Length: 277
Image (cartoon, rainbow, N blue to C red; front, side):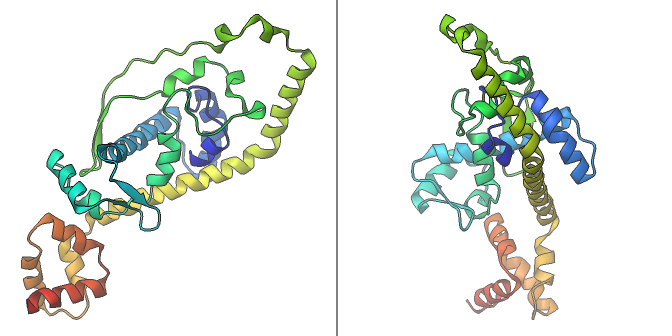
C-alpha cells in the first residue's frame, strides 16, 4: 500500500478503487504469496491497518510534545507529557511508551495521508489519473468509525453507510469540454504506456511491502505468546532458585514489558542488580 500510494494509484478521494485492487493488486499478491484473497479480505485488512493508525494518531494529537524516533521506532516525549497522557488514558499500557512500532511510518504514508479527500500526498498526474477509472468504484472502501484497543491489539468495527462521492464531471466548466482531441489522445496513450511497462515492477514492490507487514504481524503474535517465565528460563547463568526469585522481582506489568524487550544478557545483569539491591 505504501508503494501503491507513492505511485499515485489512489483516486481523487484518496483511496484505492475497487477496480485498482481487483485488477492490479490482488492478482499479483495472490500469485506471489500463494493465497486466494478477494476484495472483502482486502477491506478487512484495510480496516485493521486504519484502526492501528487511529490509535497512533490519537497519541500524537494528544500533545505537541509527542514525537516519533525513526531510528528506535519508538514514540518520544518527556516524562511529564507521558504522565499527562496516561492520566487521561488510564486503560492504556506502558506498551505505547516502551514498545517499538515498526509499522508507524508505513501506516503514516498508506493510511495517514490517504484518508482525507483532497489531501493526497502524491500528485497523480496525467499518466495515473484515477478519475478515468470510474467514480462508482471509490465507494466500497471508504471506512470510518472504529473503536481500537491498542493494548489488546483488537478493534470493533461499526457499520457505516457509504459516503457520498460526487462525480467530477459536474465540476467541469464548458471550457474543459473544448480540450483538443489530440491532447486527450496523448493522455490516454501515456497512461497505456505506463500500465504496460511499470505495473509488474510496481506490483512486485507492493508485494514486498505486504510481506514485510505480514511478517511484523506474525512476529508480534509470537512475542505475545512468549511469557515472562520463558524469558527467565532463556536467560543464561541462572539456577532454579534464582529463576524463582526473578519472578518475584517482576511484580507489575511495566517491569514485565521492559524485561521482555531486553536481550538475555541484559536480563541477567538486571536480575543480578536487583538481587544485590
